[in-house]
Length: 125
Image (cartoon, rainbow, N blue to C red; front, side, top):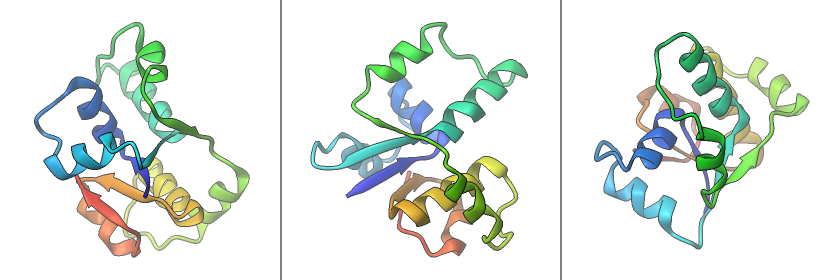
């Protein structure tokens, strides 16, 4: 299975936070699954950090690079696909994740119930 991590799922994973469900933790750590982190997630984290809404370690890039995850770039096709999504969800970062999941056939790991309306595979975080 190919997974795409939502922003808070990535942060919970990196922090070994008990907020992350056992099912999500098991799927992320399963070596048979390919796990992706979108550039949109990194972008959102850095924006929240710059606004003082999130504290991350100064070595965050190295911490992320040390994970067995694949980085997923944002392409023009992903950007166009966002415009085709119904407006069930208004968060631009989450809309990008949904578009990427649809185009790349990924299962999103999230706790956000608004994702359910988009008929994409989800693992509840």
